[in-house]
Length: 624
Image 1 (cartoon, rainbow, N blue to C red):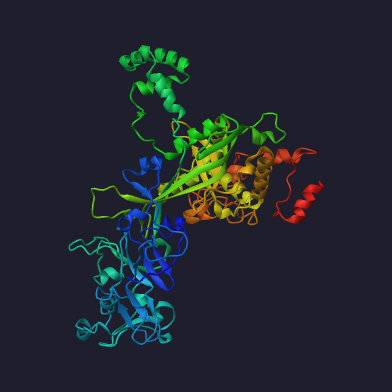
Image 2 (spheres, helix red, strand yellow):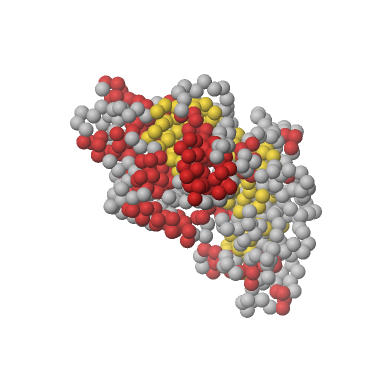
């Protein structure tokens, strides 16, 4: 095979150029085979037990990489040419790469013109398979009057041409595949219908382009013709985890204390009898839980056995952050270093803000491991194709992974205040709009449940990311969010982590973590709220309850709350400014913060009109 020299960043081997993705490189159209094709000697193993516990049995490996110039024996990734059908820019002749000339690749036609990959491929509607469109078969099929006996029996396999003609109109109607043997001509407008390939008798082979054809393995789902560069052709499913000391959640420790209590067996033996509630009260008073927790454990309603993996990676991360916030300066040496500080009650900052914020963590170092679980094609409801399709099922599958080191800011909110707020009828009614749309969507059930706390904290994270992009030195696309906002977990969570991580270096430069100090964080929070108070699209935006993809945003648009989709856990969905700042009869989580600041005469920290930092602005601050 011909070696095409092209460099990728390590992070790009997960997405967007990971296993199964179509890549356009130097005029070539390539597709990445699964990880069973990797040279394991040059693919180092990445360690993250927390992530493997969620993925299942397997091995995390980083893609083969090198530094410096590429040589003959340099570690590299394999890519297959796809689609194999090409047309000549000069003579418009169509040709296909066959098994005869795979060893000697030529990207030039006999006439000397360059060969260009065909722009349409066939994707399986439900099976996530992809294949070439058999252009000769397709060109000689159809239901129009042009399909004569000479067309049906044509064998001029090397006489196809891909032509453009304005005589037949514009768009796809002007693009045609013609056969010089039988003079059959068919426009591409016949190709794009949902049933077109199925009507022509073209079936799915049930494989990926790099896999050998399997006789009798015909997929039952229909094929759909799509452009090879369409976004839906590759929907990567990745999973990331912070490499932290696995802390036991508070609910697990409480359950262990309940089970080890001397009177717990009495509750179990009574089996909900009259003495069970009384003894449960005794146990709850001693261990610090509630009687309901004791009775639930006695009835076997909770499975908290140490052997069971955590239901969610975020549960362990939340417990680790909470423990770090209990300390002060973190003197640990490792990949998880967090300086925690509590928000003082007598702070000079607005009490409407400080009363809802319990603690802040300056994450000085954090290690994140991202892994590619697999991919889907055409829709989120299609079958998941795993990242390792190797024939040897006895070995552990290989998940492409990358480790990244960075820094961030962690905010923990008061559980009592946020629970009191989300129990308000107007708040619940506002969140129910998104909850209903999520349930009605075919794919949105993969997103987190948009309960009020999640929507509010998620939107606040976006507002803070937009403001941090001005002050941290990082572009907004370099910042990531991780939302901890679930009330249905054994340990309720209410917090956000905003961080940045780099995979091509041993960390970042500290421009983000320094902004977690009290004298810098609170002005940034107030500025972020002030930015969102008025949107350039108001009053349309603030009064809206149907924006974004599948109408999964309420009062949120590009002028106020949206960020780069790569920075957001849900792809810029489940956002609403009203649940943060209030409005339209809805009580916001931070409804009266700006009012308190504006009503304070001579405030030490007035809200200024948001502007981008510049040398002049810095000089003005020094004068003040």
